[in-house]
Structure formats: C-alpha cells, structure tokens
Length: 367
Length: 233
Image 1 (cartoon, rainbow over the protein chains, first blue to last red):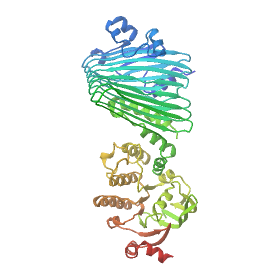
Image 2 (spheres, rainbow over the protein chains, first blue to last red):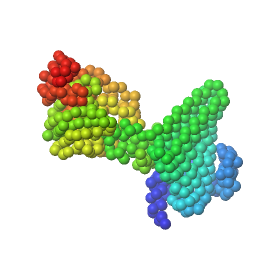
Image 3 (cartoon, each protein chain N blue to C red):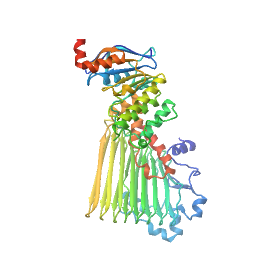
Image 4 (tube, each protein chain N blue to C red):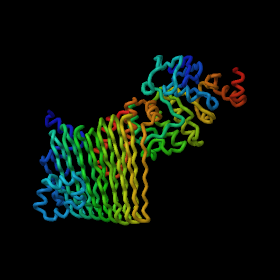
C-alpha cells in the first residue's frame, strides 16, 4: 500500500501541489470526493469563483445555462453516463476584465483500485478576462476508470491558458471529453502531456472558434509499455478570421500504440487552420498513426497539414556522442528537442512546470 | 605525447580506407592535413573520435599515454578530444538547450562569443548558413575546453572575415595548450594562424608526406597532389 506521503510525492512529480500553497486557487478531487478547495485573497477580491459544481448549480441559477452546452450529453456512452450521475467537479468563473497572472490548480486523482471517477468541470471566462489553469490528473492505484467532462466558455476577447498533465497507472481507462466555445476575439491555448503508462486513453477536445478567435492545441504523448493512446484535437473555424493550430508530438516505445487524430473544419472565409503531427518510434513493436483531417465548407479558408513519423536520427546520436554525451543522454537530448513545441503559447509563469514534465518524458524515453 | 597514432589501418565494410597512419601531436601544436577530396582526411578525424561505421583494423590511438583506440566517442570527448564536424547535422534541439547541456557537462560558465546569439532559439544547424554552422560548431568545441581539437575544414563555406574569426579561435585554443589537427582543403585559413608546427599530405588513405608547413604548402602549390602521389609511388 502506498502511504499518503508517497502519493503526494507522486502527484508533486506531475506538478500537483496537494497543499495548494503554490497556487492562487486549488480544487483537488480524490476519487469522487473533494479533498480541498482553496481560494486565495487574490481570487476572492477579484470575485473569481472556484467551487463545487453541484453546490454552484444549487446556489447560482445562471450556472445551469453552461451545463451541457459545449458538449452534447448524448455524444457517446461515456458522456451519457456522466450526465446521468450526480455532479462531481468544479465551477471556475472569472468575471469580465479580470486578469490573473498566477496559475490556478485543478487536480483529480484516483487513489484506490476499482474506482470509477467521474468529473464534470465548467470553466467560464467572461469578456476580456485571462487566467492560466494547471490541471493534473493521475491514478496512484491499480485498475480504475476516469470519465472527465470539461466545458469551457471563453467569452469575447478573453484568454485561457489550459495546461493538463496526465500521469495515470498502467491499468487505468481514461475518457476525457472536452468541449470549448471561444467567442469573438477570444483565445484558448491548450497544452496536454501524458507522462506515464495507461491502459487506454481517448481524448479529442472540440473547440469552436467564433469570429477572430484563436486556438492553439499542443499534445505531447508518451506511449509506454502496452499503453493505447488516442489523443488529438478538433477545431471548428466558425467565424470570419478564426485561426486554429493543432500540434502533436508522439513518442512510442515498447508495445504502445499512439494515435494522433487532428481535425480542422472551416465554415467561414478568411480562416486559417494548420495541423502539425510528428511521431517518433523508439521500438519495433510500437505503433504510431497520424490522422489529419481538413474540411472546408467555404471558399477562402486556408487549411494545411504536415505529418511525419520516423526514428531517432543515427547521425544526430553520433554527433551528440562525439560531443561527450552517452548514448542514453543523446537519446534524451533528441527526444527533449523533439517535444519542445508550443511553449511559446504558454505564459512564462507556467513554463517551468511544463518543462519538468517534458524533462520527465525525455528521461523516460529509451531509444 | 598528447596524441599519438600508431600504424592505424581503418576499414569500412571490409574496404581499407586508411593505411598505416602515424601522427604525433604535442601540447600546443598545430598540425595541418592537406589532401584532395576522398583522401581520407575526414575519415581520419572521425576515426580518432571513434565514430561509426569506421572500424580500426590494426594500430593504436594513444592519448596522454592511455590507449583509447576502442573507447566510445563520448569517453574520448570527456577525456578532452573534440571534433568539429565539417557538416554538422541539423538537430531537433534548440541551440540554447544544447549549449546549456554542454556547459553543465564541461563546467563552463561563459558561452563563446563566436556562437551568434540570434541562433539560440533556433534548432541547431537547421537552416544555418555555412558561416553560422562553422562558427556554432567551433563554439561547441570551445565549450568542451579540449586538450586536442580535431577540426574538419572549419574554413570551408566561410567568408573572408569569418575565416579570420575562425583562425582567431584556433590561435586561442593553441595558446591554451590545445593540440590541433586541422584538415583543410584550400588552406586559406593557414595564413591567419600564428604558428603551424607541421603539415601532412594525405592521398589515397595514406599520409604520403610530412614536414615543415611552408615546405609542404609550396610542394602542393607547385606539384599538385597527383604529382606528389606519382613521386611517392
């Protein structure tokens, strides 16, 4: 049995802070129970709400308007199951013109085998507001199931930086379902990294961009052992001047399978979409698949994609070894370089945490 | 003796590329190796550092008296041997990150000025001009604080001012006591080097002539490599 301290250490390695001290706000859920909601003065004085979603629905009538708008409750059997269960999760509401530079933490972890954790989060950024969310999801137990619904509403000219670090256990099934609506001039930067073996994960956040809205999604996927990872993004350019970019980097080793679905659909002119998926295969028994889809329903959209799958460059490894790096160090350096994408979209305050995650991936990957 | 190469035979897929190579480099010496394309100059440098696919069939490489013939490239690099590639490969690694890692590895505080700062946030050698590649590669060699620097055509593809900068670095390395083996095709850089101890002519996988730099250079200019090889035969 893992003691509390070990559990906390494992979560800390993924960027979570169970004490919540290093964040201006924290919501921590273990299995289906809230461990802690911490709202510091900075959030309180700016009237930022971070609370239990069930409680919010009871106390604030307007919250219901944001339930099941960004995601259809009938989208699939997993979503449908969560829609029929009691609400577990959080409401995060940021009032208009409120800019919070320091990150807010959401942490969901499974501590016992056999748990079916369901989560429903609603995140609303009102006009001209901006926040950075650091989300950690982990399992520190045996076989378990995570169903996570996240609805994101970024209103006009607001900006959300959303970082998710996943560290599941080899027997966890994970089904996150995320729907986002970004209104005129809004921006959503979504960064995802998976660091640990997982039984099976399927996630493809859908982002609807209205006029002049922008979204950048970055997924860094590490396939280990027999993990099956199917993670990507779908961006819908649903307003003039909307721009979306999907960046994916997959590393597959052992007998893992990593699939990168990526889709950009354009419904308005003067829109731009780009998909960039790269895979690095580090074992003969691994599998990588890139599925880029571009759909244009209008004239005047500019949609592009690029995709490559390959192995580590022998020449690069030799070069680095001639500079004094052991083979293991050289592999780590090349992997670290391969996954060094999209950080420019994140605020400086959250980059060190992401870099720790990327360093873990680079150290774990074996050529 | 800092670096001593004794009767080295090198092959690739059973084809002998280098034959009976002997070379001795003392601390603070500059040795220039001349030779036509395909003579084996780059192969010699890559063999010394231990890069595949070159296989040492016979002979030995001694460094400070230690037999390093079969050491791995990184083991040789950590002992103080640095190779500047003629064409370093583009890598998916930011210049800044590789510099950081090399500074950590070799305990160096300052980044050599020769590496253009505007290249720090680009993937190293990716889309670099000839001059940028050479300067950056030489800067990385400096970060290794080497005892022996193997420089493979550091002057090729570099403009006149760039050649002076490269020569300045080589002179600085030599002043610090670093032994230098410099491979050059044209030899333009040699007129900017303070002191060259010895020059060698490589043709067809062999060092066919070694001697005083000026004598060797004059011989190449007057006779050409074909004539020299004919005389040797």
